Image 1 (cartoon, rainbow, N blue to C red):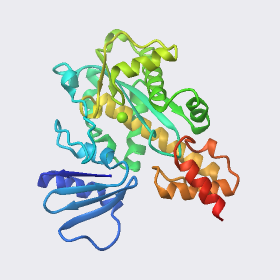
Image 2: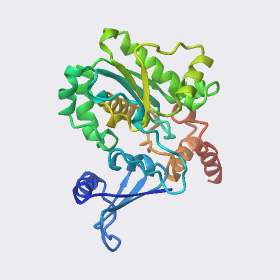
Image 3: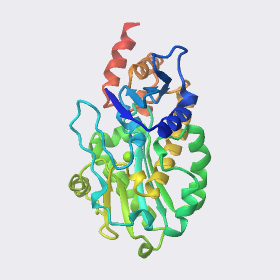
Length: 311
Ligand code: MG
């Protein structure tokens, strides 16, 4: 899977600086400025402004670098991003409760969903954190900014660790689990603030709103009728509350990965690639129960079992 984008010289310089810490290898292809490994994705930036993202998750890693307002789906996919046409004018400066989740595509670790309320008067404070490109911040930046968000803004995190996730997953598919987590986190924050102050809710979109509401209904959960819920992909670019929620979810995910790695006695890798199968196979050989560390329904489980039997 690969995603190609074209950047202006300014944006290209920004990208190259950003991924410098993840630079890999010594030899570069002709015309290239940088090659980096980031979250299992190989990033190659060329002097021409072309940037190639290769590997599963390439679209997600490339996403924040797309010029704002321009959707460029990866070659070979027909998936259309939903644009923010439905958001009212001036939405970015409203007092908004936003939510986002991480971990759905990673074999090891939790599914973590966060909701954060950013009132109009807090927007300047959040803006100076410089988190609009929340998806590309380094772990170190997340660990620095996340606690500031916790200390200042009303928030709630639903952290489904693997043991719980696997239990729930027997009954609910991943999209349903996301819908239930978002809905619960948002309600918890609404209970902490004056609801009249919340002008709108913005959910970083992972499903059509009708699907979202159907899953809530099927699970017997009431949705939120007031204030109005908006859904958009790239939500972090449309309101800073979603960017803050994304940071908070990543902070809790990082912390969970650290704890799980300590318990497993090995550093658990992110993503769902081959390197993940190897580590899972090691755990099986050591008779460490995978259900406490990984999302069992991923195909990685069978691959790891095969690998473990080979030796
Ligand atoms: Mg999201």
